[in-house]
Length: 74
Image (cartoon, rainbow, N blue to C red):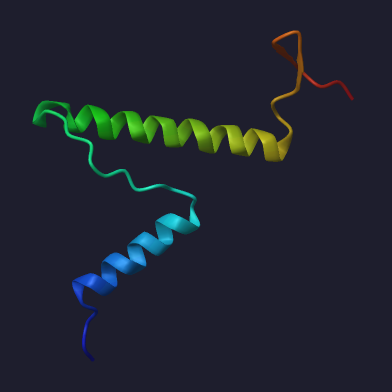
């Protein structure tokens, strides 16, 4: 059995990312010391987005009234 080429692996990776509605960001130039901070911030944003999506699906957010989130009453 022959393994996939690097191009095939990259194409599959990009397809998986596209299915998750993730956009590839290229052309950002930053200092090497900022690399980890940028990756950590991107992970934090992704976690926040996932949490918001989960809250929207479960209805856990409540009702927004005058800019505040009020818990839903039964």
